[in-house]
Image (cartoon, rainbow, N blue to C red; front, top):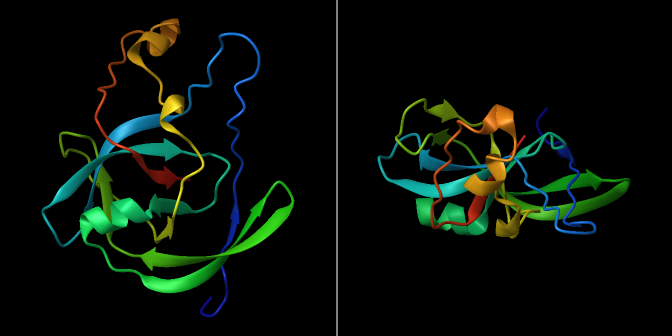
Length: 150
């Protein structure tokens, strides 16, 4: 509905807990581009099942040369409500690193910082610990986490 603010529900934790256990999150390398341009940017995408909206970093927006409409959204996280200034971007697409399987993203909102850090990116060594994932090969790229997808 025009004129209403989207409400975002998100839950993340950066607390590692005790011992040597790390928190490997659903973070994979992807390519992102605008649907009307050929230039793409390698980044990591964090798939957040607790979120109802897609975010990208301000840095990724600049790298893509994307323009967004300035707006405000209200975020609800664990009972706390916060209104943030953001830009709404239409026309972003995400794909595998090889540019296969292009997927159109819904409206994406910018955020200065996404709620995860590089230490949450699972390494190949961590993935091999789970027998059902031992044949999965996830390439490592030199990039930030630029997408937080729902």
